[in-house]
Image (cartoon, rainbow, N blue to C red; front, side, top):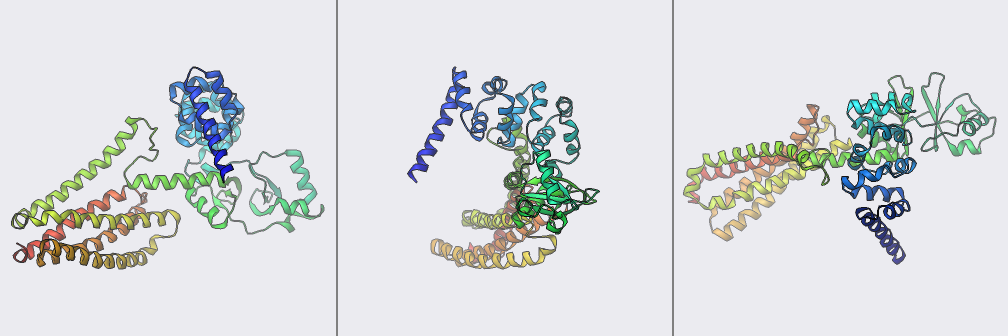
Length: 454
């Protein structure tokens, strides 16, 4: 354990040294220090540098080294680095990175710059067809670097093919089997090929039941299948079941991280690519939009309070406990909506499951409502000694927590039914719902029982 801690401290020290040297006047020493690091650590250092410091350094890093660094850069810093590269350097650089990363970078460029970069690439004929697939589909994540055999080949022919072509595939543990029209028919492992007799046919070794994904499928579906079957790669096919690419587990791990982050951000009304490194101007507008929605909701809640102004004047203690009813209801709604949004994203819940999910959450909501209604009622009675106020608060808590879980289920499910992202500021919408209804239930019941409260 001590050895691991020491090694980690040394790694951290090397990162800090490289960054300090690059940020100082010792550029040559910094580049030497940077080159000694693992490409993943080099990517980390470059992503931490200010643009003004980083841009001049990029032309001094060799293209093979920079291409390897690109493999480890996250989306946001990678796009920033690309923006700092001259277009003339970008094309040859993209020839050296994995094809799926090259496609992702080209998708992020303006159409004009993408065309210029593509024109400078020797691999353009292989890359151009991949650009037809939207970035967030399985096709947009796939690479065409894979190994495929004909089913009637012998093991000797397959091994000869591997020796001759020396494939650049990221992984060769899965070797796919296709027919004469490139339709996916099976999969065979490298181990099976190595230990089999030379004259044995591939068709006798292959597993015919192959799990694949359509190129048009959402990247989340590809990630779910890899997770479900514990694969390290997944073949991608077109509508005619022809093998056109492979998406690997490392790319899909990035997808899982991106989708989870996107869901969290959208629930809070943040931009999909929000980060602390994002320019302030680009972060400001998306936040303003949903904050304006929240402002409308606050005024809606204020309008409810205003409608019961006379009740509050007769029993000022009501104002003290209004945040309690609305706040706990909002928390209950956020708990439910987080669970439902994540379940929808993972494919654990479909639209047909709404009734079952709603009944389950209602049971939880009513139970929590009864428990917290009793707790709140007892606390208010102990504090104020007012039975009527205690009953009103307890019943309002029960009603609001019940409606909160209802909204927590129906809001994301309704967004999914409308073909929108279920996480699309759902937290903002549910909080609005619980605030307005919480005040309405509490003050409405207080109005009915004002003679027992005032």
